[in-house]
Amino acid sequence: MKSLGMLSAKKMPDQAFTLVEVVMAIGVLSVAVIPLLGLLASGLTASRANLDRAIGAQICNWVQSDIRSQSNAYTAQFDEFGTCCTTNAAAANAPYLVTITPKPVLLPGGSLTLGAWEVAIKQTARGNQAPDKKIVWGTQ
Image (cartoon, rainbow, N blue to C red):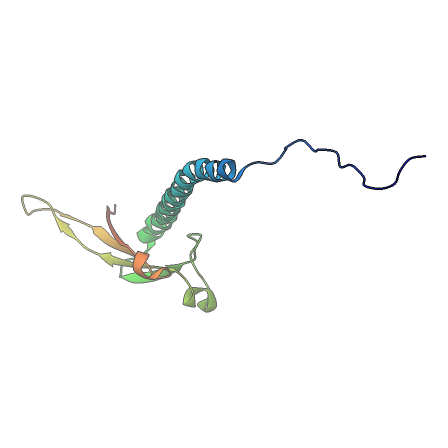
């Protein structure tokens, strides 16, 4: 007969990490992750700047094709994708306002005047990040 008195506990092998090992692992991980977060922020900033440049180029292409049919100053509104707004509802929320003004340029020597236009693109949707870009084109 076996005695059912005290059961003997089997000794389990040590399989857990110590507190020192856990703290060191967190330290190594933070040294690796913090620079990646910094790169993510600069990547998003560069992406936004490139998107603004692409939209500006698309607006400039539209203006360049439209400017030949105009003789007076006018304004146009563009949406966040660089598409000209044709309805009043879309124009009310348009983040880009373009002002096109004729600016004749007197060439050196004073005998010839070049017909040129001043194009001011104002970004209105993002508050303090709203740069004004001015571009001058000649017309033929």
